[in-house]
Length: 74
Image 1 (spheres, helix red, strand yellow):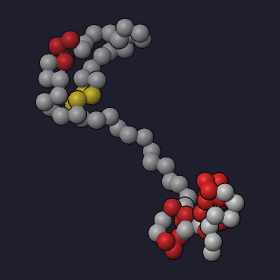
Image 2 (cartoon, one colour):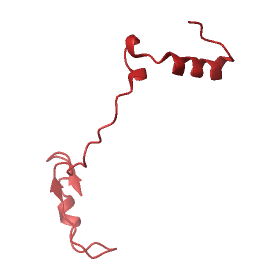
Image 3 (tube, rainbow, N blue to C red):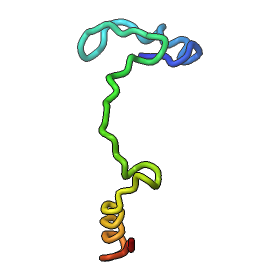
Image 4 (tube, rainbow, N blue to C red):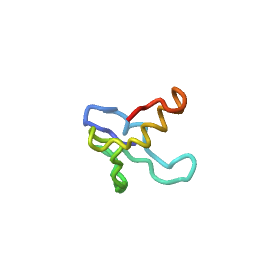
């Protein structure tokens, strides 16, 4: 069990101990959050950025699906 600050679950270590009921590993209390996984690197998506990056084809496609054909005029 991870404690995010020293004040969280102050007395948990008194009961959170002994073998894990499912796999027998040791139960332990650790101060702080667990280590995270790798941060993925995604390709740029210009249609999700400021006005200069709007993909007009995507915008038209979305408008057509929401409001009917030829809903977005250029």
